[in-house]
Length: 263
Ligand SMILES: C[S@@+](CC[C@H](N)C(=O)[O-])C[C@H]1O[C@@H](n2cnc3c(N)ncnc32)[C@H](O)[C@@H]1O
Image (tube, rainbow, N blue to C red; front, side, top):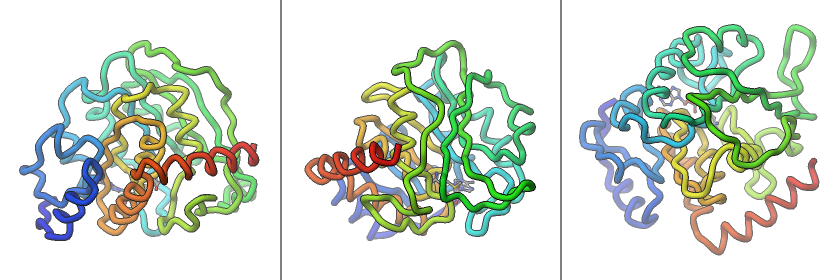
């Protein structure tokens, strides 16, 4: 996607130091300086081509997966997911995890054209979930853990977590203006299980920036791609809020407490 350079973007980049989002034409982006700890606005299929082979420690993502969700581009089918999979495999280091949310509806298709090896499923139980399903309502989201090679788990834990009450609301942030934001406390649990401090995490479909915020709070580095400029701005706002050391420490404590209470 060719996009114009905006003054406000440069200003933002300057103000935020190592956290910013880029609106540069893809061919002007340089790896790693324009990628690491950045939300990059553009098409992940183009952007990922600039990421070197075997350079990413873990991929954690939440792709469009064919549910035709209002406000999520490329959600009519699984084509984009299938297109990005080989690139994810290329950029991921050997012995690493590929972790993705996916729909129960299309579960069998997750294993088609998929070079990764299936490892486990982690469930996010959503007591207030009201998404219609063929049997009534769905009350959980699934996150699938795949492997490239034989990675080691960093911290043992469990495979069912509970969502904080209130859809699209983070206890410490309020309403997140994106159709499918994932709770950052859940992503943090995943990060603690499968990644180490300073690891480089790629999310090619970062949406409202939940993966970036979770990485910031746990001292992981991140790369986030998002095609929709409005969502990039939301992600950038969240990242800037959490990148101030003092604020993120305060928020981290509250966030952990809320999550403890919800378990
Ligand atoms: C399911 S949402 C991710 C939500 C995210 N996990 C969060 O917590 O906000 C998928 C995202 O992929 C983005 N997307 C769709 N096609 C894309 C593409 N070609 N490149 C980058 N992002 C894309 C959509 O705009 C949407 O925000």
